[in-house]
Image 1 (cartoon, helix red, strand yellow):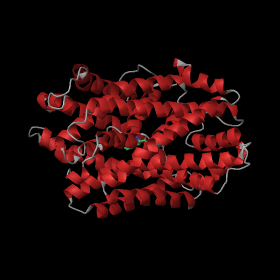
Image 2 (tube, protein in one colour):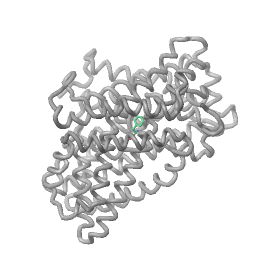
Image 3 (cartoon, protein in one colour):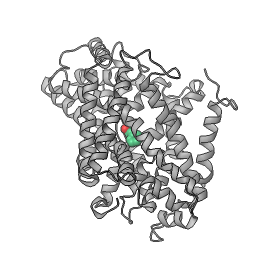
Image 4 (cartoon, helix red, strand yellow):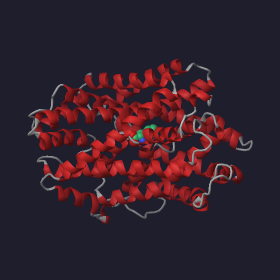
Length: 461
Ligand code: PHE
């Protein structure tokens, strides 16, 4: 699998591919949604804290395991476990979670593609805020259209993965990511210039700690993991394509910084706009971003229709691309496994996984419409998949990876990967090792224990 063809040719390619997986709808859609429903600033602070303490170190942990193992997750864990065979079961983590995460992520990516199409057809022109809200409700609850857009996204993802890692992923990320960043910056400036923008800033930056409950903490942890794509073995799978001279720690810090910045900037677009547009609420849930953004385009550029048209079209296209670089990494997790372990060709593995995901995605999409009342553990399919991935599998997976690297893997291997065999100074290594061995696993354990009611640091509201 780590044949030359698949090694990222440049160091920048490695960063960009990891950043491409990290930056996506998790930042632009899920972050504002979660921040809005969890009360704003206090959630944001806890999220940033978890980003530093948990998600970023676990990202580097995945890099270390992936690059040293040099193979798919099963083999990497087996190779580094010093004969403790039980760890090979970690290989199932990316396979199972790959299916789950792609199945619901592709629904939101499908919505994004639909909005890009609407932008292309000039469908936003002259609409009011109420119309945008009604349009989204009608579209997302339809039983056919969202499923078709989702199918298109899955087909595109499948096509790129079948073509192979390097060609598909590296090239795309290099051009789109910086462009998306520029567009987001422009939108932040526009959004901040809207009336009542300061109320949005207050919501985002003035913490009200009385709103912090156990579930807010769990959500903030889930968002940090989801946003960086960590805890599932996705980045392990990528890191086996990394060159030996990539500075894993530096890359981890860079990717986490870019990712957090994009999330923050998305918040700076959405919340000022929410408070300036009549009828919108920060806790609207999954519809928040899809209703707010078209409003922003109309309000800001409405006077110059060509500008509104071009800007919204390019923005949505970039967002689709960002979603694709993430969904590619999701599909890659399962495809790498089937390719390696069942000896299926990459294209065949990609097609098989995609077909199964399409089935599951249909159920997720219907949970916004006809299947609204079909619930399991009190949640519709979409919410259930999201819960399982972000609030259960990612933190548990992350904790196991920390225990593995901190306690099972030989310290010499750990140090050698962090310092590139002694050629790099890595002054943060001791701190980092301390976090991986003690702080991160303990913190994740305590958050779960609190949720399970073993003690009550933060009671539910
Ligand atoms: N981090 C990605 C995003 O923000 C989502 C993702 C989750 C990608 C898990 C891969 C694995 O959109």
